[in-house]
Length: 283
Length: 254
Image (cartoon, rainbow over all chains, first blue to last red; front, top):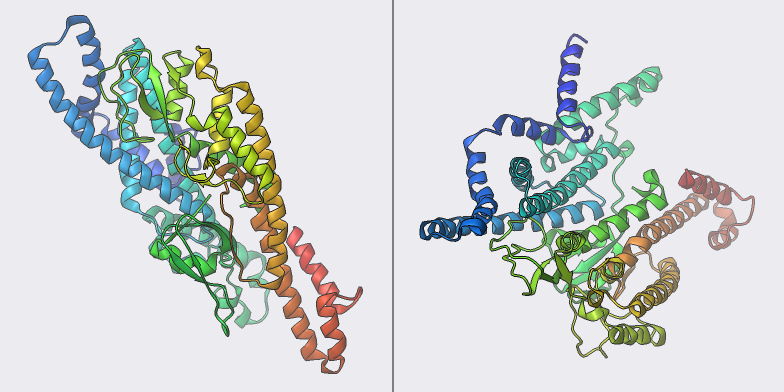
């Protein structure tokens, strides 16, 4: 209780910074804070140097024509932009894949923290570039600004939808998730701890404290822990030729499927293949 | 998720997501402006630009639509949206029992399969193109295409619904089913998936609980073995087995 006012202050801070994203997990709130702090930092300035001049120089060139020195500088810029774009795109594609798989999968998948970090980093930097652009009204600048904004929003949507889905999964089965801590990020783990405490406290107050027998008082009876339903039906697309055993334990009967086929099947039957990357879940 | 959000909501959400994904596919535009730099984007393609007025270039669909709203480019209609191709596809859909195959690329050109193929995101892309307001008439998909698209979507959905009825029947026989659905497209998945998976899951739940109940009863009353084995297939009203089944259904509906 003593810390309540501190906690409230923290919440207020977080809310003040990002009103729309009240429910975003800690990673995001933290990263927004970083963003505020590091706006003036050097590595951000570097990035601006890469992207902004492209737009501004264009503007200047239109009025003044090309200078030879200008062109040299331009080429170097171009290379940098290209390098960075490829990397950006690479992350985006990966995030898209991760997002689709997480949404379609009944269980919690391991989180690629490096990817999440890289993407949120990029979003921040792009946001900073856009913010700077707003001060220079002009046809091309305005267009470029809004294009980058949409681009940024798309990545951000996927990221928050991914994290939201993960938190939902954790909330659904808090007790079961205790065994899957290695699949979570640090802040998801913190979330689970907090949620688990609330859950346990609630259970104790409402039911467990009023049970007479001590043996019935613990929450970790394996049979009582709710788990995600791995027998669920899912849609999968086969990426490499794979064999699926649809028989019973006594009499296996193996089906073979070629790449590109879409299947409806139970998640458990393809779980192994999914782990090997031979099939992918579809949304 | 469907249990919490409600089925309608789940469908709307997944439709939104499939449209979102479709917007990343590449289309060809003819820009009306010059811009000599690449634009570093995260999404769609690795890079877009440089732009030269009159020279076709490839950009993600969402970008193309933004430019078009500002009348800065004209959108080239995708090849497969041509009336002839769609007539072909419709022909296939109405005469064959299978769905026209889908491909993952946006711009399908005709291949061996009597020309009738559709992109995976055909419904979403088609929607975007027929509703896109273009400042040059030539760039808009013809009205006939819109009608054909609607027909195709309708026929395909009907066919899939029938397939899924068979599917649930098959599941009764073998719970470990693994059935191929060739040619299903993104929009159809978005509408049908929540429904189908829910139906199959519920059916599995009822089947397993009926079986386990029957087994439990069998253990209790070995004498009435013959009667119980009958009720396993069709529960006699008012019997113990039926009651537990009902309570399970009630639990399921919550």
